[in-house]
Length: 398
Image (cartoon, rainbow, N blue to C red; front, side):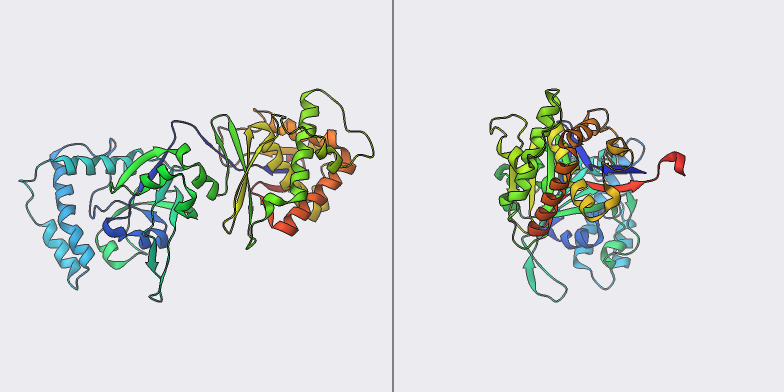
């Protein structure tokens, strides 16, 4: 059997973008986007993009002009909506002309329906408050998600007036709902521009990415995420978690210096107390105290990734003896993978080996202490890594 640790890490560089999409004038489509997990531009009836997107030609011009005629009808949602839309389809738009607004609209359509890729981030700002199904006002949060589908015609399972409008949509997976007070002020201001679509650097949404509860890589930094479902987030004060972190730092430092295992009789708490605060392997620690809260360990790629992997393994092993990294073939049975990005292989960057080295330097008695500390942090503070752990049969066993 192999112990498979999945660090679930997304990689963002300076070329990656997050699409900020405004949900229609007056936020009128926010609720539909949220409830049906779609995003779209307010261009009813527009055709699907061609191989090269939307060209600046007479056909595209007529379709944009036609969709402009349909927008107020769909918003009014009258009793004869289908017939009214049909009359617009039958109108002659031969005299339509390109202008700055229509040029801009064509660019937005090309961005969302042609350039945006599956896996790209999308952010939809909220109106602040919104009526629920009981007609009561409640706070609404900005939506953060990722695109999971190609452009398609929305033909069922939606508000009748929007289905009648035959919108093109991109299916999304909503990852988080964010209070904009958590965002950098410049990013929050950028969300409120009235342009239907803007492309912003993914790095600008670092805190949004944190709220999406994924490990991420931004440039040369690894941001290891730890989340809690507790009503009160106190994990940044967790004695057991901080001892866990510092003990792993000490193990990684010994591995880097080519030193052997720790001596007998010393606990992880003793080891943690000896770590120098200025050691550059000590990750920065940031916390969001909103519920559910999350914590970030930020540092050079290797150490925070090892933290995430070992914490997840410690909590899992405490509950399941089959996940003992010192049993069977020992640490050779451990495999670190990354299901979020094929481009970031934990073996290629040394994370897989660093996890094994840290465990071997700790040794079995201290591993038991790490498991206990991880379980305490999990039980007391609800803290958990978004990394997952499972056992899988080796190929020769199948």
